[in-house]
Length: 224
Image (cartoon, rainbow, N blue to C red):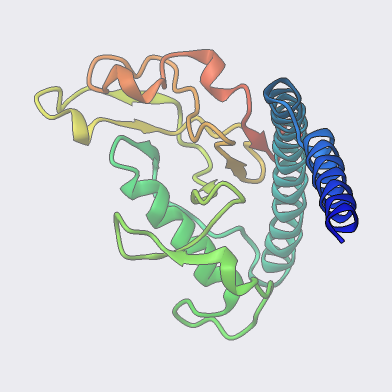
């Protein structure tokens, strides 16, 4: 009886030993875990890079398509009215208030919500029309959540005004219409900056409007 009990205990001990060995063999070492983490991080970096590139390409294509659609709508507007919606003479302002005002004029003209307007020339997606937090006006936003810059003031020449140098927020640029016979319509691009020749005296350097490279990613109706 004692011999049988001893055999059973020996067999049980053998099973426990084999179980411990199997458990030990199935476990990951610290080096293996670190290798897995490195691989995961590398894959995540690649995916983020691809995602960022795709987003940039989609935003660029979207801006081009939207500019083309707005341009067609403006041509339809001109065919009915006889001229494109006229903006003020100020194209770009340090406070961006003039850009918002011109953009709102464009929106109201094409959406049929302006004074004496009854025809809708373009139906904008809901997410594309947003209230500008600076002015409270409804603006047509580009894929970078910035108002499209619309300008149509035929005959207005380029002139940088520095008459209010004591208040940098009021510096502005007049004129500079590229498409003299039609209109200018563009997105500032991902950096939300453009180049303003000569606008240095009154305007803060942080706006990058003195650097021609700040317009490198602009999407315009005369370049693209």
